[in-house]
Amino acid sequence: MSMKLAFLPAFIQSYFIALGVLFGGALIGGLGAFLTGEQPLTAMYRFAGDLKIWAVVAAIGGTFDTFYSVERGLFLGETRDIIKQFLLILSAMGGAQTGVTIVNWLTQEHISP
Image (tube, rainbow, N blue to C red; front, top):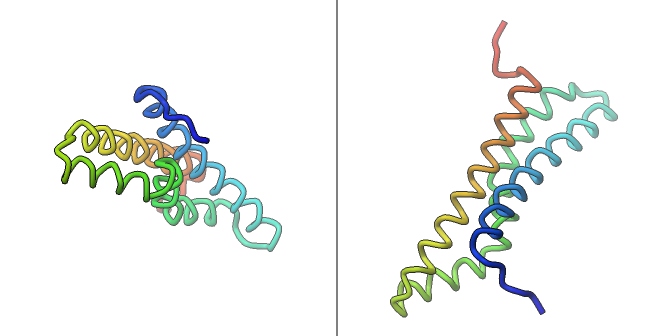
């Protein structure tokens, strides 16, 4: 039995879930790279780019609920649902981009010698 959240808490949680998935995944992936003898900061930088879409998907709670809300908005005329889903996806994308920015800042891989 899942309980529907009010919009503002869901909006904030979407941001931080995406941030946590991306930053945590890159950090743990960097640890795994270190343990296997690879360069951990380069691996973190690479993982951050690879995990971006998955962080967004995890933050919006899977795609089926989102598609159902968009379908309701399009076919039943409930435009409020489309706007809410768009804002939740935008929030998740912002959290993922913040995670990428933090990883770029920590690893300094974007700076060429």
